[in-house]
Image (cartoon, rainbow, N blue to C red; front, side, top):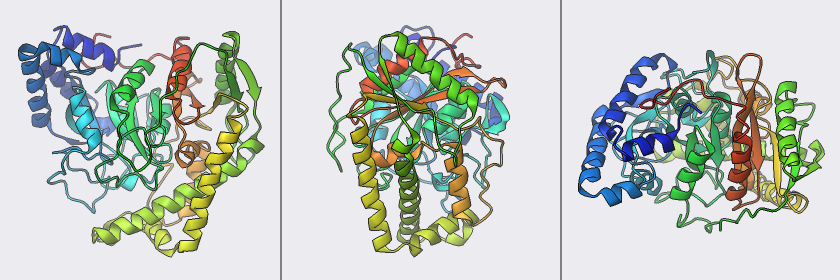
Length: 470
């Protein structure tokens, strides 16, 4: 496996290395992988302050230290979401200055309570509007597995840092696939939780009408399960906490989708990986239920439209509320803001009504199946520059994103949990990712199935985690 955050935490907990030593090694890896452009902002002093506090706690309150799931583990926040106190988020935009830093969000406080030592921000496209992380202000984020390709977006910097082993785990956000697409590009595990499962307070400003969620990109399913269990619950609105559902040991009905339609065809090697994964589950005794593109087509189109309308209106409102100089933004960002201002209240209402129907249609599908297995990406990670932002054609940009990850928005608009993990590699040694979708509150089911597929050992990380031997 080449290590994960759980293994690194165990090494620190047992004294194989201190938190300060782990941070120093991560900083050395940061310098070594600087050309990847994964990190947009670095604060080594902040990281060492947290690491030294962890090392002091290990001596003075070993019980408290040992109870933290990730004591002393270095990590990075995304340059979008949070916020994390002391880390000046700019959302990948020159509209904000790198100064100050808001107080911790509820989620950020939980990250620190888990024992993480934060020392920087990872690269994000401007305002998270792309499935590549190449903001005009820089840096351009590259895929550690092939630097000529994208690491995905909008949590591309987080995924690149984790895949390269700079850190073992990193904060990420997902409003339209932004955890899962980068994870899929870089051979990682990415979970978009159920709506309401993860706290977004106190402002709830990044919820984007409920479609956005925060968690992490991880190197293993066990890391994903552990951080989810630590961060979830008591989110205090705006929707009720979902109740985790026991997985049980019974036979599941696995819905299988291997057709993404003629407009967004998925490459054969990616479909072959999905079929190989479902055979594993079938051999375990689960029942496979074939699903058709017609079961999803309307929902996929409505989800893409809802994502576009919600982010456009949100961006226009943010620019107005913060009195930002929009002329300094990238042309594509300006175009999305203009799109938001032009959207009538009736059009937005119709979009939000359709979003409710997307959720209802998925619930109806889950009368027939317990989980759905489908492709995550239609193609291998694209070349750097495939999602340019120096133009004003929002429809072209949205179409490019839909063609790359046609099923990504479905989980965000519906509110359902979805998880991606790698299941083999293609002829260019790039990961072949799967996506699992389950009813709300069924993260345990997703994690259980993902752990079973991960156990097949079809993917190995290319780079060891900083602080762990290869």
